[in-house]
Every structure is written in C-alpha cells, then in structure tokens.
Image (cartoon, rainbow, N blue to C red; front, side, top):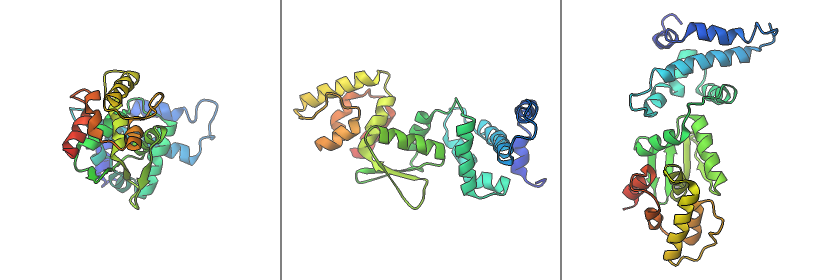
Length: 236
C-alpha cells in the first residue's frame, strides 16, 4: 500500500483523533472483542470515503465531482476489492452511519442537468446513477408516487417514464406540495380534463392516465424550477 498514492492522499487528511475515538467505541465501552471483522472494516471504509467526499466537493456544491472521484472503480483500486463489494459497503455504510448532509434531491438534479449522466429517449429518461444510495432514494420516491422504474443489465442505469419527473419538480418548488397540487387541479379543470384528481398525489401518474402532455402543466411551476426547465428543453 505504500505506493498507493490515492490512499496516501486521502488517509493523510482523515482526522486521526476523531477516527480513533470512533474506533475506540467498538472496544472500550465494556465491549472489547465483540466487534466483528466486518464492523471494523465498515468503520475504516467510512473514514476513507468520508475523506474522499470532503476533498472532492466543488466550490459550487455540485455533487458530480464527488461521483467522479469517488467512483466504485477508484475505491476498488485503493482497497484491492471488487467494485460490487464497494457498492455493498456504500449501502451498508449509509444504513449504519447515516450521512445527515446527504441531499439526494440536489444530487439527482445535478445528474439530470448533466448530459454525461442523462439520456432522453422517446418518452423515457435513462439516468446513470453512480451512487447506490441515491439510486434507492430515487426508486423509492417514484414507486411511492405510483410510478415504476426499469433496470438494464448495467445496474447503475435507472430507466423511467419522463412524466414521473413532474413529481420531482414538486420538490423544487418554494410552495408546499399541497399548494402545487391545488394549482395543478385548477389547471386540469381549465383544460377540461376529466380526471379523478380529488386526492391524487402524483402529477406524473395523472398526466399518464389522462394522456396529456407534460408541458400542459408547465404553468403550475415557477419559471426557475430546474426540472421544468430541463423538460422544456427536451420536449420543445
């Protein structure tokens, strides 16, 4: 490992005192010898990836830099393990040591805005999602709103109907979701669209069920909404 420059760059920037305090909790709280090998490995993984993320955050806060520099491949080269094991460790780390600063809404918006990660084909959006935790958050959100996603052989690709991006657009409004839905109901009424919208919670599913265009609801959102701006660009 002495010749692994990537390892040295990041390990030197870890707060050693803080790291030792966390490690000590696995041994010196009347629990000496109870920590498993996987517990210790997970904590060491947490130290490394935390240092990598902290040292690859751009001044603008864009998460793309982190995803490029903290890729499964680069971490696997540092640790000498498979990329799949790195992904599994990322998931387990988030479950055990949850990152309160993880803003999956913003991370998703950054990916959508970057053509390197996003492809629009017909009525679908295909997104390359480098982080498995972000992928699970996105999938869960879509499914909770009555949508669905498809997967490819490349498990990093998330494939869904473009209409479901409307539900993400709600997240980026300054108004509450209830206010957005209220405006959407009024817009549907103006369009003479007969839909059961009394208690709907998904704009995407409503648009699909009614067979309408996404752009027919563009006036529901503010002009600065990043998702709507992207949809306008792709659909007009």
